[in-house]
Length: 50
Image 1: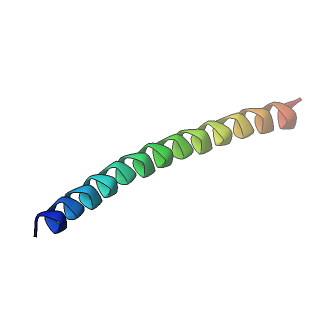
Image 2 (image 1 turned 180 degrees about the vertical axis):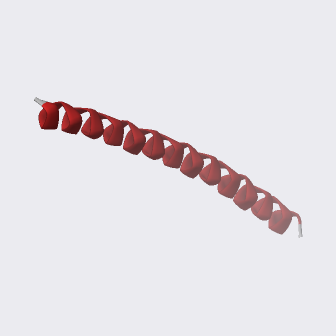
């Protein structure tokens, strides 16, 4: 019983840690996409006007 409880505690900790990592990666990807869209829009307007 002790090992089982300890095992589940380890699994739950690993899942929480993984969720945090996934959330951080998703935030970074979102910021990157928004930045890329802004750069593309700016360059597109510059090229179109120029």
